[in-house]
Image (cartoon, rainbow, N blue to C red; front, side):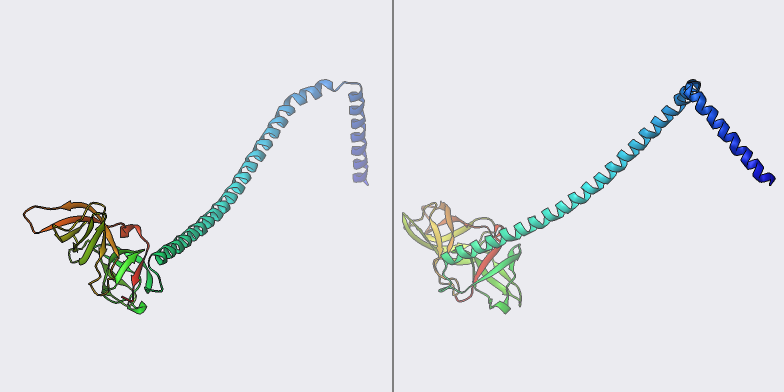
Length: 263
């Protein structure tokens, strides 16, 4: 009972104190204490507000940066896929154009042409076709109607090609130009040029004349382009003269070549 009376007394005291504060506030007696309190609390409140705003801005920046990173990563992935698809499409278009150009030069009705990729270079180039594809030693390797070399060694799934630059390469050829026709032997020189040797002095050969295969080496058909004459070498007292010959294509620049299987 005493505890209950104390609680009622406290409640009445607080109520009375509240009424006094309300009365004082209505009479503007509390303006100075309120002003003094606001002088302290307002800067604190402002500081808290700015801190919260800054933190919120930083969190928003981090979230936006993360979102931008993910979107950028996704876009890079899509761009990479598009570039890969584009590259593959360009490669297929290039291959189709290569096949079209090749068959326009050497008809597949007349020649059994086997497409092959160059997978290795050096003194000999390596192709990805071998005996399992009908490749045998001595077959000519061409691009369009240009002679690139002959098959020198064959494995089941690959083969190596003897290039005309090689000193072991000797092919009967003839040159043809406005001045006439000349016969000779095209020899490798281990460089970017070939040497057409054993040309009779009375036969006409000039710079820019095209040089063709004579077709006496078994599987090398007649009329394949070997290159063009870049310089004529002759001495009055010698029986034969010579001519430097440069090929029209460099195998380093080619991806696909063709093996002539039915020659």
